[in-house]
Amino acid sequence: MHAPFLAPSLLAADHGRLLDGIRAIEAAGLDWVHLDIMDGHFVPNLSFGPQLVKDLRGQTSLFFDVHLMLDNPQFYVKPFAEAGAGLITIHVEPEYDLAETLAQIQQSGCKRGVSLNPGTDVRLLEPYLVSVELVLVMSVQPGFGGQAFRPEVLEKVSWLKDWRTRNGKNFLIEIDGGIDASNARICLARGVDVLVAGSAFFREENRAKLMSVLTL
Ligand code: DX5
Ligand code: ZN
Image (cartoon, rainbow, N blue to C red; front, side, top):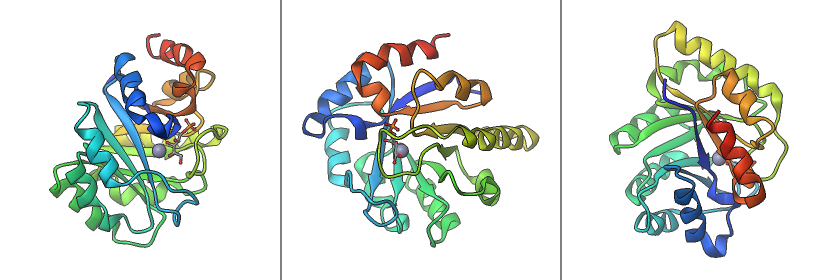
């Protein structure tokens, strides 16, 4: 498997100075940025649209890890792929054709991710695990940064890691929500490959501590 790494969530950056956020990620020597896209329906918040992603694309070569928290993600694959996404992750909870949308993501040239909320049974993902490059385990209820990590979701990480071994697959396991220096190591020990961190990365006093976990 790939070495574990960090994908900072730009949601926690100053939205009036997003480019500074991008530069901070680059300066830390990281190569992914996690972009949280919200529709005010699937989650009670709004964030970034395809135009913003496209304009950031012109400013950086960071890999764009696009997390769609949308009721109708099938309508937004093309706009975000054209805006420069490298990976598009969609949720299992809303009512839409998930398999078809994963196929659409692949056809658009992006890597495919599937995600689930803390209250969702991980076994619901099983039919899709052969068709994704990444599984995103939410460790907070999506919608807002700065929430407390929910350790019970680590059971899902163990289940996914075990399933991946038993089935000879190699999707990455990513975790998102409340990640900081106090829980990052526990996540990595359980089998997480990619840590998403918003608040802990963009609050500078926490960044060094968080980054040191990766180099252990
Ligand atoms: C939550 C988002 C997360 C969030 C993480 O809806 O999916 O990516 O920005 O932020 P922190 O690290 O502050 O919990
Ligand atoms: Zn996210």
